[in-house]
Amino acid sequence: MASAALTLSLLFSALFLTTTTTTTSALGINYGQIANNLPHPESVVPVAKSMGITRIKLYDADPHVLKAFANTGVEFVVGLGNEYLSDVADPNSKKALSWVKSNVQCYLPATKISYIAVGNEVLTSNDSSSLSPYLLPAMENIHTALISLNLHRQVTVTTPHSLAVLDVSYPPSAAVFRRDIAKKLACILDFHCKVGSPFLINAYPYFAYKADPKRVPLDFVLFEGSGIVDSGSGLHYDNMFYAQIDAVNSAVEKMGYAGKVKLQISETGWPSKGDTDEPGATPENACKYNGNLLKLLNQNKGTPMRPEMNFNVYVFALFNENKKPGPTSERNFGLLKPDGTPVYNLGFNLTGLGSGGSSGGGGGGGGSSDGTMPSVSLPGGNPPNGYLSINDGERLGVGVLSILCMIIIALQI
Image (cartoon, rainbow, N blue to C red; front, side):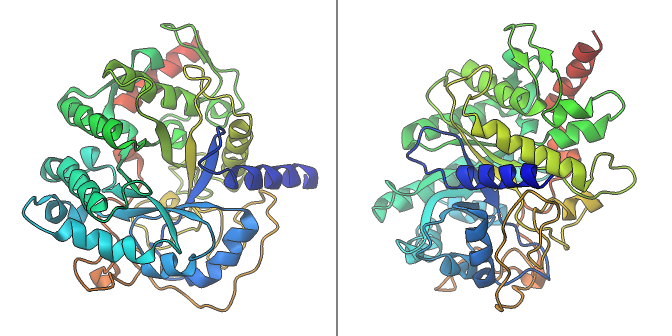
């Protein structure tokens, strides 16, 4: 067991330390802060260093985090919450420029910010009808602001999507995007082509297993199964994670953007604890999922459809978050407990937390330097829209149910 833990620790370090200039897949971490018991970001820095973390994705632009990680070389994805889309999308407003100045430019170059994630799962959110018209204009205005500040070569603009953007998703070779949002996705893909930013997808095999644990083999979602064969392409998939990724690859290809847009996985993970109706949410399964994910990425083989594909994966999440709404699993996706100790043993030689104290609740605390449209000033400690929950009701859309049902059939044949 100790030997296995050491091996996983070395894999974590190797993957976290992979830089954007290499041709290998790289691993990052999501740093959510919907909690009232998390350590101050200054105390998190040595912990992150001891884990070998060099890529962090935020759901806001928390000034405490960005300042704490100054001069560390850690690369950041900062988020602009769904609640700001309409303001930033206004073509007659200077709020996009103000946001970039206050939440990105002021931290450069000491803190390495490489991406701005505009919104989160906007096209499939509960508020999609009211928010989706603002998504692309907001992305374009943020990019224009970066150009005006001469930052567009070092910071690019993107937005994360859930797998619910898919209509048909199995077999992966037959996958297509939902018709009702296909035009919006085509415009977003065109934007990615023009600015050179990645297409982000949040992929959670856990929710497929949770939906039907009696018929979806646990070993298939934990990277330990014999797998299935895509009837359309003849390609073999020994895990659901790669099947989900190639379903997105196939849908992107059908839109005419094969080889033109890079796909990155902005979230994936497994909960270590759940309610009685959340099967599989255990420390053992979480350890297997994340540990096997690391081993898979360390092989640098790409997916069956894209064997040459090198992509970044951001594990969800760094800490358990005790204030996230929803079922128990929502609060237990973290690799670490709030005191900095591991939830399960992946072999980290962790440096203990410093004496920085708690960072409080909400989405990260603080606000922009000039007080104008802050990215993280959250009244009442409410988290940013788009990061309230990663529950299966949102993630397990029609497209994912399609892949779930067909996988069940394939595995029974």
